[in-house]
Length: 287
Image (tube, rainbow, N blue to C red; front, side):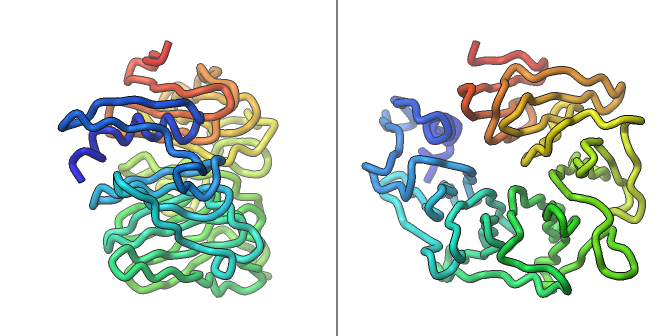
């Protein structure tokens, strides 16, 4: 699987921008773009993940695919993900299981057994099939999901416990949870329904607004932390926010489907405006 590791960023570019791709990896490996003609479930790709074993998981608008460098294996047919097959987000836990966020709830795939199943949230007044899981954020052995009108949801991958955050005494959420990210240390950042950015350093026991007034007129479906900045991912105009100074400015891209950090020195972003690689100085390597 070593060759896959050397070309994952290039494959990411090809999948999310539908560009033809030719790259020489280790052993002069030549890689071309993957499309439905090659066995991909659908040409519309929402999410990409490379697991610890080197396999590349591709979330499409018609289910989940796994690419091993030679062929594609399909997962999550209609009967498992409800009426909508859009795979919006992917995350690998410490046990190697792949958590799959869809337009109609959450699924789990075990790569070792290839077992795939729906993960029931089991929360009062929450209709799992109506939860659109655009993001799955991992911190240690816990997964966090911004679940729209249902607020933020935490899943303990060790015990299976599911907890819902910031709800009133009657069990109804007090805000719309749009997007979420973690800075890798101690701070969550989140976008609420009012368009403001908030942060929490105590796992939602307290939530503090970053700005006196909302800075967004829309709900981004992705929020990413990199280089001391927050980056939004949405079909509308995107912004970056300096978390130290609070300075808000536009990103180099206009519409982005996926902002994704790769390592410590690059941010990958792809969408209708093309493909971008930002370095730690926020310079676009694709320009």
